[in-house]
Length: 147
Image (tube, rainbow, N blue to C red; front, side, top):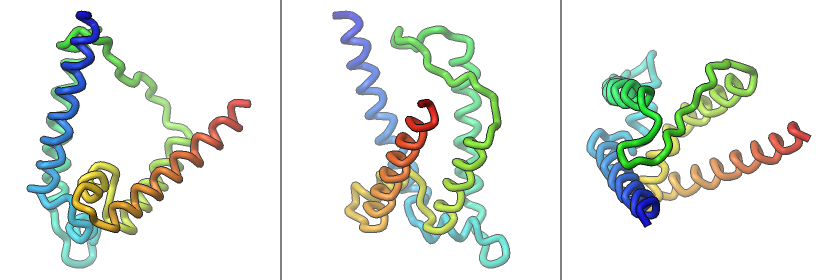
């Protein structure tokens, strides 16, 4: 019963964190693909606001990971699942390039796409469908690679 309560509490905190994150994206304007594309337009009308949002996110992440790295369980008593691999291989580089190219073409990444989905934005729906197809293709190729 105690373990189930911990999982339910974790789920509630996850939901609350996701809602807070989504609200932050909306308030910062990061769900607007034009704003994101303006950040990537270094030769035109460059908008540095996404860089400021990223800097804030990195600062919060550094603090959270420095605390989490010293613990074996979460504050709710659940096991910590922190990635440990530091290998930069071909798969990581290619995946990063595909992500970056997609982000640069449409100005949407996964988190804002979910926010756009919630608003009924067609671009968000198309992006999420394309993302799911890409994830499925990866799983298919990964399954073949492991065989």
